[in-house]
Image 1 (cartoon, one colour):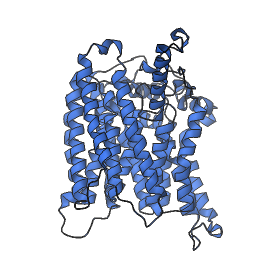
Image 2: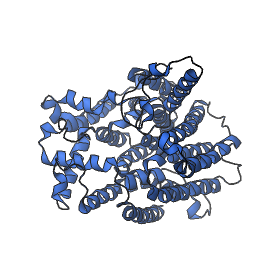
Image 3: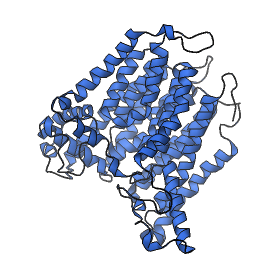
Image 4: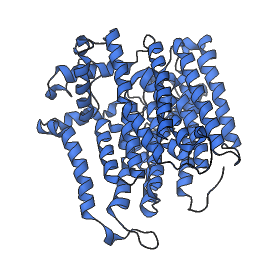
Length: 519
């Protein structure tokens, strides 16, 4: 198993290095400048000014522990090019700066490789003389280490998600190994590195309270209230409080907690991100545009009285819907909580161990993605990567994984929008998708198709969408008049697959035990 994981890691990072040098001169995403600016802020300014500095529009808006992480990186960065650490050097991208940024992602991804190895240790290989390449642990190693979405988001677009997902997967692995305090510590660190993982915090909180702080169940499976362990609760609380104190403590001491929180939760950025995430609000926005267009053509609405169509301008800003009621942050919060409530209640009233927790974590991630406020399209990876574990253990989950992964990965295509990047993203996604389908089919060979007929038709439809958006549309006269159309089509089509996968995962969680349903 260790040899397989190392082999996959080396193979993946050979590919990463090739993609790095091919794309360094091609792709300079905004996130590249975001993190360069954060290096400069944490290195050049006193701590008291970190969350007040606004020379650049890309202000520091991650939790303080990530700021400390950037500070550590900055001490290495000064040996490559000290000028990158000047706050006033906006959009600075010297070759040495690019080299450092790219190498820093590869170096920090070592944690992700280790986390993938630990996840593979949690998967039980079937007994027999099965070829090593077809073992669940090996398939999982490739699905994690060669994940298409993580590859383009981190190593072409540019972010540190591999480092962060390393903490998430390692935390999940520790819970699967029944090392709950270590799992709680790792998740606490993760939450203080990037607050988007609040999406899955309810799953952690309820699972640890129910299955760690309560040590026994009644005969009917209900919680035994007398088994509650205050010491275990204090241990968990001490871990969370200690990590938060290390992260936020200096800012609380300086009276800057409100300022930090205002940066972490900027609700004035609008319902949708500039690149619409494929969720329920993409469908809602599209329906609003259709109703508005029909209303104007049928002379039921006055075009002059409608709000300006800013939500299809590809900008991060607030906007008002034209026909349907406008959505507020409080509405998205209520919808999100309602969407995850059955999953959280399930692991309280009907706990199924660590894998039940993992399924609940996936539903919390998808519920927050589908109904959340200003969701980034990259957040779909929070569900895709952990789902890989279940996909190599359960046939039904493998089918859900194929739908969600193919749909979610294609929804990331707009991140790489230049013609030079088209063959790169298409080739990499094809390689990953073909491997996922063939490996999982071999894993469950002789048990029928992993996909239902309509699922296969839907996924084949992605080919048509991709051809229309990536090839036909740039050659059409609509490119100048409706530049947002490919993004709208991508978001709407992919949102159907994401919402469908969410519902199928829910069905698998709420189904009574002992009654598996084959697709």
